[in-house]
Image 1: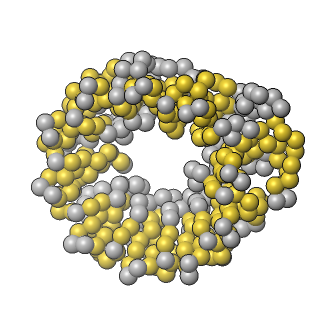
Image 2: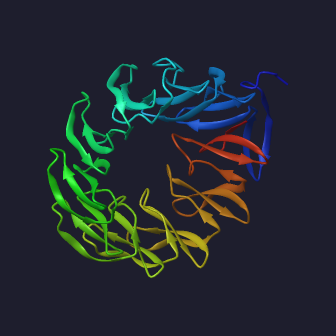
Image 3: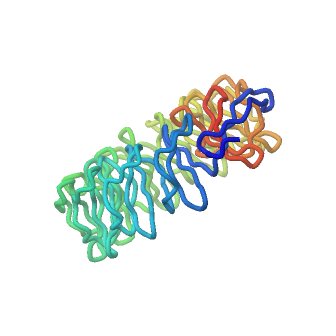
Amino acid sequence: MNSNPSTTTLPVFKLAGLFVFLTFFCHTTLYSQVFSYKRDGQFGLQEAEGGKEITPAIYDIISDFSEGFARVKLNGKVSFIDQTGKEICGFSYSDGLDFSEGIVAVEQNGKWGYIGKTGKQIVAPIYEEVASFSDGLGAVKQNGKWGFVDKNGRMVITATYDDARNFFDGLAAVIRDDKLGFIGKDGKEVIPFEYDDTRDFTSGVAGVKQNGKFGLIDKTGKKVIPFVYDDMYIFAEGLAAVSQNGKWGYIDGKGKIVVPVKYDKTFWFAGGLSAVKSNNKWGYTNRAGKEVIACTYDLANQFSEGLAAVKKDGLWGFIDESGQVVIPFALDIVFDEGFKNGFCKANYQNRTIIMDKKGKITSM
């Protein structure tokens, strides 16, 4: 056997009816077309297909890739690498978030600021807390209050709020005196401070909570539907899951119930389908409310790239959008909800494997 763990390939074997190539590594984490591997307690970077090493295993942590960059930690300090393994800045930061809109928040000496994809400082680390950029602005906390800065580092909305969320659809939820309202990107109040909780604006509407119940408002603050739901999710693919009397269904942006409120649990729509739970089993409904895949599975993930991971009799497999089993029930664990960029990370017989949608896998 080749002692190099990045190139050792064993013969073809049969996995519950599926022929695959098996390549041994150590522990892996999959990100886009590359993944991290763990060797002797440290992490490195390798290609998802073929196992070619990109960086040696020298890092304490490698995070998920976001906008082409991953956060890495070494000796308690943070930097960022691209998918070629190139570090864009030195290890001078104690913490960092994920890249968003070409900018990432970093912490230095207990204060937060922002840098760009070249590692150049954009906003000096002077803030107590920050959030990732969204809609061109980043929420920052200064002297105990929250405001917003632009990508030039200018404070464009004065820090006067007790808390703040990111901008979505041109509006941001902010809190003052324990009540939540919404402001525009010019800092002007658009929706009064009269709510207790919110789901982000998407497609012009948002779920908000008042007196213990959720309803729906538009971007002018007009109530689209009465406040009758116990809970709700954000809108995805034009529909939002809502809960009433312990059951879940879906409404559209006008508040019309399109999937009956009858399920024990739901997720959000992805690829035109959503996982739903009934009588302790999981299946899938479409946007018209038709249960296109019967509730027969013990657990179910959302569809990703045309496939969904489902669990039956203690093992995971994959089905397509017609409900046909395309990867047999032989996996112990499926990570990251399923396939991303053509690859999926899973556990098979205590081994961590990387598998493509054709069944060819690499294993750590």
